[in-house]
Length: 372
Image (cartoon, rainbow, N blue to C red; front, side, top):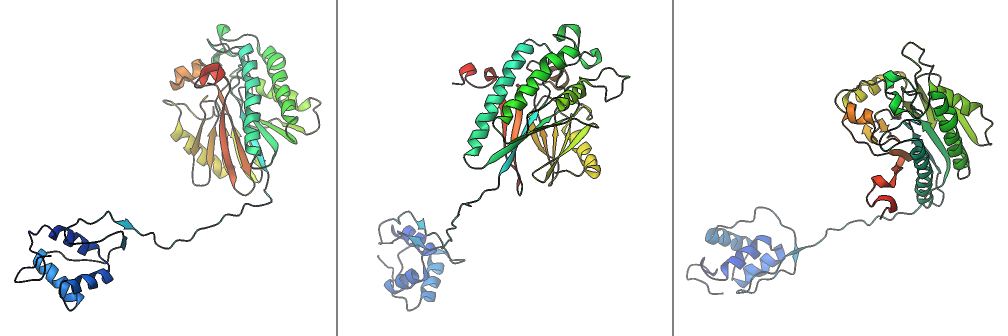
């Protein structure tokens, strides 16, 4: 490097000066010592003072060490590579013994007997078959990593559409009366589902809550509900060993699953505003929590599947519906719902471990009928 008469450092406009300043600002102490010696300075401090005075550059704090950095006078500095500091590589040892999980199926708003442009009894039966097959695909996928021996099915109400006009069961919107909806459609489908599940699980437990569409009339007691007729018939049926059915005694059910409490209700207790009333849901569930402490809540009614954190301790599962082109969802919520139900796993220590939505009609997924 060419030095001036006043300093051994290159002139400020010398071609090598920019590279010198850049290297100086990131150099290690050992490199500073070597650089000071090459320019004839007795100490690093005097060299740094000269750099500050001549070029106006100052090292404010220590900088990381760089690899592949050099200064050769006229050449530019190479791209710096920061060294990784010492880190600890943590090793995971998979447990040889794994706690089993319980699978949960949310099943509700089936509206057996309802007619829409894309829904009727025959379509409902096809969607129930798809529901079972898709559920088992999901189950077998999770069984590759953990044991799933038991399943809990939670019936969230509106299993039949009913025949009450004030609940939307108008003449052109129903295929048959409520008795036929319950005993000729819903009952065979529900028993078929439970028995099919029993072939694949050690135990099957069913808990039901009543919806609003099964109400006989405004004046009748709340328990006069076609959902309750369905549940009580299922409970009284001579079931295979390993299947249990629990009808409701009030508007809700508290279900303990792997030591986690689920507060289950239909959802018509929450007043609809514009769209799904998330604020009203939180307020209502926080009030219910004071009377029925729970870990998770499950509801239907709004025909839209979702998950909502109510607090740091509680989570709400919103289940979908079997119905498509549903007038209620379109008129009241402004939603064109996809026919979907929900399933998830519950671990004794962790609680919720996984959750999957089950689309029950492949026309509503990308690719259409063949799913391609």
